[in-house]
Length: 494
Image (cartoon, rainbow, N blue to C red; front, top):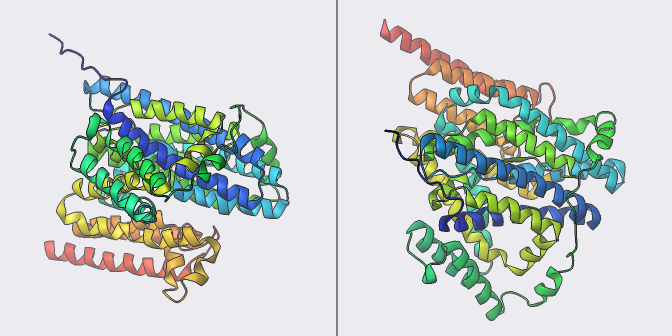
């Protein structure tokens, strides 16, 4: 007799926690995009009428697809505990497109609309490249050690998510620490909240209410919040096509930024899919990279300028016990919120210190998973793979002024932060190989690091030949050392 089919709910209570975590993570990026682009001189008609709606379309398409993908996996494995993959804009990628694509395009053209069109074209090309990369995604996943990939993800989680959001939490210490305590009790210890509310929703209600009662939040925020209310239809346009002409002629240099960050995005997707497999849900990495690429291209067709990816918050949603409902709700709410200008309103009303602790938990879960999913002997590899992101975090936050700001600390911070994802994975892979006494494999990874440094994917500000010669020599020296120990091993075994 065939086993009874397991009921996979469209929505459950745990989806509410995961929805708020994913929604607030994405909304933080949307607000940063709006503030930064307006500060660069882009008009609100482009920011609120084109860029954010385009990004919302990409987020909606990806979240709906991954909800369907989770449904497919649940039916295939007859499980009700499958968690849909989270989907959104990667924070490091967002900053690269803001300051490596949009800003240079505006400076070169002197025209905000043309700069936006160039960025849309760059985004469209980036999506196409990632979709093409998906062909080899599974092969790369098979040959890269899990400790290296999860260690790199944990580095992002420690710096850009848990670390940065803990800073934001403490900007309102009375409110932030109280909300953090609610999150620890409700999501870490899994203690029920009053009225059986989801912990994240309870935290937001309590934190926001207290912020206004004790005066930590200015009531003028309400009036400012509704300044940009209106109707912004989600309509496709030809901005990507118009921007291609400039991008492929006078602004070809911008593509040297697009290629490495697209490789980064594809690897981030691969890492996050690997993290979900470690947590119990196995998705096809090639399919996910293809979907991320296509989602990015669709967003560009609607005016978006930021590539999208399987989000690092997925394991946090898994820990929360979420299913597919949070993904469906996130896509629908983002589309509606963007169409009616509600994203800026919500971001203004709810203090950042209230939602930041939820994202601290997401970062905590990612770091914990990186260690739990690996044998204890690989912990040093996980830890080493996390470290390059300290430098990358500093670089991202100080942008072009990073070199001057950190010069008194170390001259290596900037070059270490350039291509941090590649450095993290390759150092982690070398360490795993050495731990397993696979010295030839470690030498191969060192040689790859040398090659990446030679063409500027690592330790250099742009793609060019002989971009970082000292690092090339350093990695080649590592490769020779590993080969020496490989030879010693072979002699010992004779």
